[in-house]
Image (cartoon, one colour):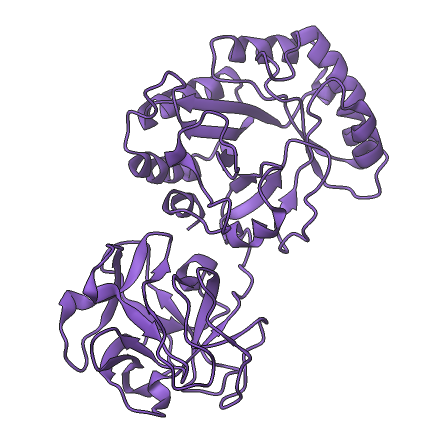
Length: 422
């Protein structure tokens, strides 16, 4: 498989310098067409049995066309065979020969990855073909058609057959924030260089619990939202946001004001800090404001109600922020509905949430069930403006490992992460 570190594809017949990398996100193009218009390999969806086709690289979603060759490929432009490897998508789905049928024309699909499954082992070879390991069949573009939706099949390998030649390129940028309302709560201990791996058509916002934007240039369309964390951060906030040259347009208030370990303020202290640090942004720079965040503890709603009573209408936030941690999807739905009803007419931002009860027993629901259900429900509520699953972090701070959304070493999104991003 050919690989170049650029989003500009190679011209047909031009050699590349590098083989497909180990365990890194790539897009895969057919070389059966002029590479300027060559479509990308994609999965039709994130489910077992989803068809594998080609589609215009610019119109498919980032998640649908971003693959990982787990063990990498052979050296470029050689006759070497690559190591047997899974080719993954969505974190836990693999390129799979349907029903394991070793016959020309058998179509490919994706299926949950199983170590040792012979239907999911491939070799990414130096000549540019991708062969089914242990068989004489190669990944093949059906009838050589580059039309959107053309199914991918296996066919007897033939040297130089352009229907069986593929080119790996670094992932084309996602079309960020084209209809979703997912946010990235990005912990400072996770490399900001991984942010593009999590930017999809559903991701619109990112924050990092500070007034400092990530050091990485953000994908176009992904909006940084600075946070005034609380007492002790006034100088940075004033320099970076109130007096800073960049107008971010939205700003977040203090962190977990009703919680020891958070900003931990009284409503009166919070109101004064809000008037000093947040209201000037609306007055002078036309910012929209996100309220101080509260936890789902019994004190959360009452804290915010008291806080709101101390503000004039012109000082009140547009968005109400809440953090939820608990053990079931139903509990989350019920609590957030109660929270919404406590602040009629206000849009809710769920700025942290995960299935974690912090009682040593973790999550009652299956994590995948929770994540898929939470994404479906949160995205469908008109009164929820944004939601930020936890955690994009190295240290999860007591949240169960099953909630990890990205591998902190490789920067690859986990299957649970893809439940929110895809």
